[in-house]
Length: 86
Image 1 (tube, rainbow, N blue to C red):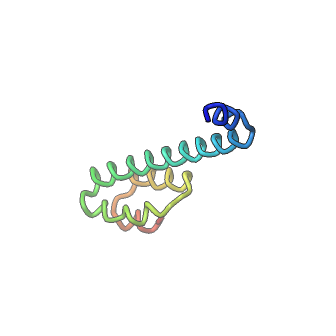
Image 2 (cartoon, rainbow, N blue to C red; image 1 turned 90 degrees about the vertical axis):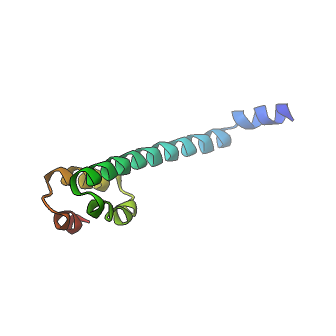
């Protein structure tokens, strides 16, 4: 059985699946890091009111859009300003 696993690990098909899984993991980890930063900053700036935006923010899949939300927290004066960009 060990020989079969070694052959499988060497196959191009297995290697492609492995690369694809690693890429997805990196994207997912990066996204979670951005959301964590957003959560911290919302809490620091707006307290519980800011954290109420998290369900809506968690639905954003695009990393560029999440980074935009993150940067807008610093300049937003009110929760309403943030809601407008969401």
